[in-house]
Image (cartoon, rainbow, N blue to C red; front, side, top):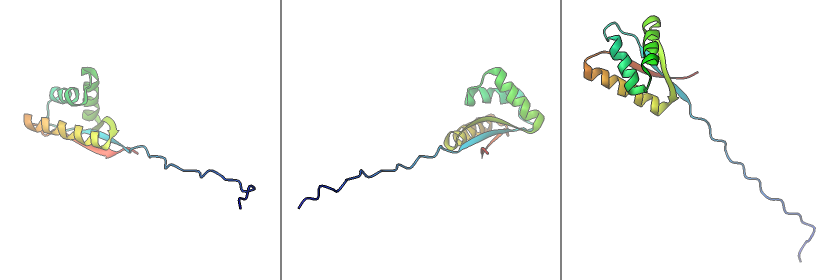
Length: 103
């Protein structure tokens, strides 16, 4: 008893669209104790900036209190900030970097 009038429709499979990872900003906080040359050195070493870019970011933090260093995923942002802070601590400076979500 085969019913030949039955039309078979393929099932549609919906794949959930993966969300893009939320981005985080690494912020350089100004202080009155860390030498400008050392800040530029840290920006070059940890964040792979050129001398000129590092100096510009450092001066922005100096003038405005903070400067955005880089925007990236959370894991990378936290790792880079910790690496920069540890480098400053080892040299005896209170240089501080923080991370926050990008809006």
